[in-house]
Length: 128
Image (cartoon, rainbow, N blue to C red; front, side):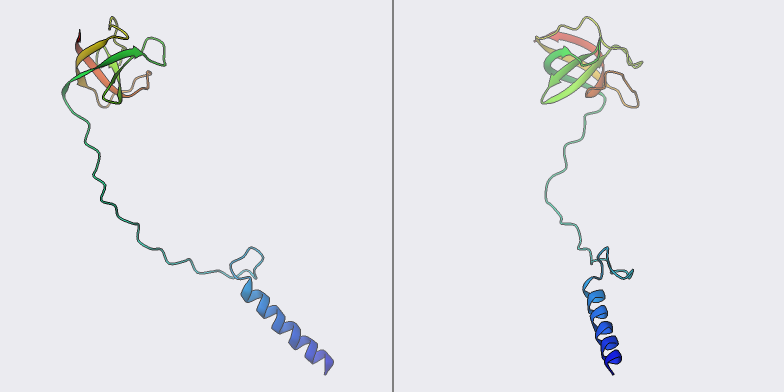
């Protein structure tokens, strides 16, 4: 009778531990159902304006880029790498550290080792 009572007590305690440990690493190997996911919250923030395409005119200051030979126009809180042509050659002869207006064509599908900002093929640079 004692053995039966001990076995019954052991079974009850084991079942209680297994139920309370479900989902833990020390559980009995059972799986825990995934919690129901709630839909992502929606926001009413407006999408950022699209990047301009084609020819652009920007006013800003040209600085040396982080890579040798590269020049970067800082305009309107953004960075633009200035290039001579569509072959990603950095622009030369651009005045540095003075306000300028740059007329340029936006380049897409082109990579540059300058790796800073939007790529622009310079058409004209003039002091402002």
